[in-house]
Image (cartoon, rainbow, N blue to C red):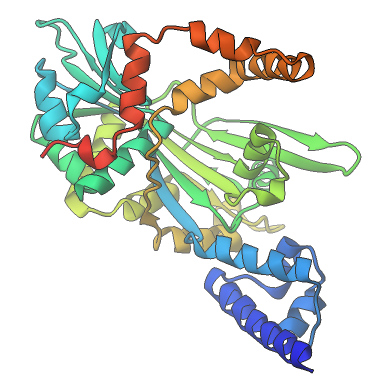
Length: 399
């Protein structure tokens, strides 16, 4: 009897949790059931406290709810950034803009974009030009660099707004800005949007679009569809793609285990990038800017026979998506691991060989791998990586 009482309590708690999660993310019972891999009736019964489920299903539901609760349905992140400064004193940039001790950056040769050298801390780069070169100093953050820099911002008690405020003190120019909207709910079916474009159910300021994708022949379904609005060579374009399929292939995991379903990216260059950040500094709200751009450039409609195209109604799911974009926040995903580049290189190029040597050592009773490692002398660059990775980020920031 005691075991049944505990089970009943678990079921009641589970039912309440499911309903609360569904309401928060505006999911139907059918949508929730599909995510878990059970029938809608099971979810309906659980919410009424009358169903029995296996321990495996119980764990799967709680894990799914916990994962959903870690994120808002839509989050906006800064996913790439280039900022230039019309000065040549890199010390000012480190001390007053990045606020990171320059000593933790490795000096590197770089001729990227015409610069003559630079400093690098994993994916965070600072490049410098010749004294009379108008290029001045450049801060470049890749997607992973943005995540790493967010760890520094968090340790400094600063935000992206504070960082850009400091940039403007030195007459910066933002020359590249990528904004990404992570969709944890799958508001939109990207293959369906592609079909709507072919049916001329998209009204847009863009003149061209491109797309690619893959699919399953046996299951007769599309997988991993991407749509590109505008030209990649222009100062602004938008990309919609199924992030879950991309990550599943990259990480070799089931697509269901990837929390981000879709990603909607906006890439701005030069004057367009500068305009977005200038507006951000005025309002402090990126979601309003993103919403305005979406509304201005893309309008998905529903075809109606015998009705002029300009009178077609806005697609309900697109309207719902835009409504929640307005409530979206600028999120941060700090990553304090500062040797990701080295690890990724090792995984791609040397890890398999090292494992082969290790397996041979196990079979033959030798220690060849250890002997190879003992013979290697670490360069100053390698020692620098060790120092940076073993130093707490709080000890790397400028006072």
